Image 1 (cartoon, rainbow, N blue to C red):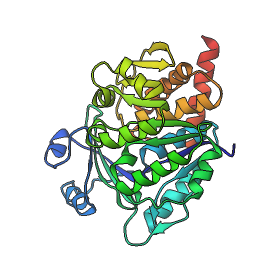
Image 2: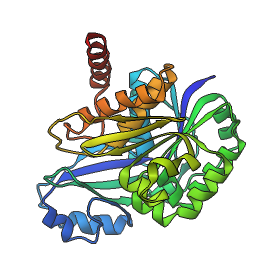
Image 3: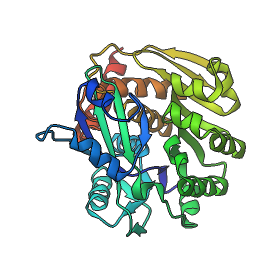
Image 4: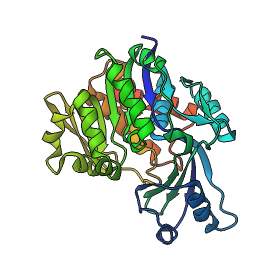
Length: 331
């Protein structure tokens, strides 16, 4: 196999601001959730910030954040995403290269901008997102994507990919053409996305079961209801349901486990689910059981919530893995 993990996801440049809840309330965003908005609406929101407010700029997107973790932990990763021919697009590709991720799409849009996500973090570490998807929601399908997927161990995507007709159609074509030898991993992304695009999730699950499903309690409930621990068996073979600072529920085939959350002082939940998925998939690639893989995901997410960023530096990803390995050998 050429790649361990092939991601298909939105390419978004994240601009993160730390604000009071009153600022979020003054906008038309959905508190602690994702909302798709226009570039002009983004500019209007930004005009309400203090003149000296400066964002933390990170090349994000849920799948990309997961791949950054997986790649820096040592897996061989590639990404199918859509960029525009602009400064943010160039920044994004440079960032993929910096994190050891191969970019698989050579087409660049000329008429729309590269996607941008405004992330507003409030004092209790909730994140509210106003996202201009731009080029990222206009993925142009290339038949070679299927060949790349069939030359990978895991095909990984995100629920956000289902919010655009172009992206969804391209992803579905890739999935339908991918052999069962390539495992399928999916992150549900957001409860509003699950509820709003239920028909698309249902169609994907009719193509094949998910081998590795990542979601939080709210997303799981939106998908299958309150009895999610059993009900998710209908759509996934292995799955994990995280629950913030509470224990995660993990099902590996018929084996059930609960993983206690590490008690840390969280300052920013942005990226916690992304690094969880990326860390867990890396351990799956290394041959660990899904339950053990999720223990590493749990540890990694406890580290990222203590940072003011959805990503770590290359050096800190490597330190995280080394610290975890040492803690495991000492226990």
